[in-house]
Length: 115
Image (cartoon, rainbow, N blue to C red; front, side, top):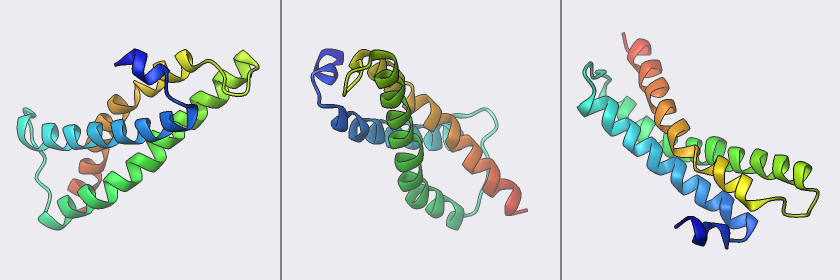
């Protein structure tokens, strides 16, 4: 899979990062709601808000944002127009972990706001 991602155009890496961010968000929501030792209880409207708005927000802010920053850093370090795709790919693969952790922050926000 890594070889296929390296062969992608740099703009497609942003799209892939956004999809990976959504995957990380969904896995984080599932983990912190059902599998965690201390699941957080939030109202149904908060779950609806987190799943719809959170998916959009995390794909734009974390997915595209990290891909953009990684592309800029790789371009600055490499000096080429597209930079070093290996560097960008390495950073983009961290996106699901960031989104996974952001899901907990979103749940905590609504957990304390609903009290």
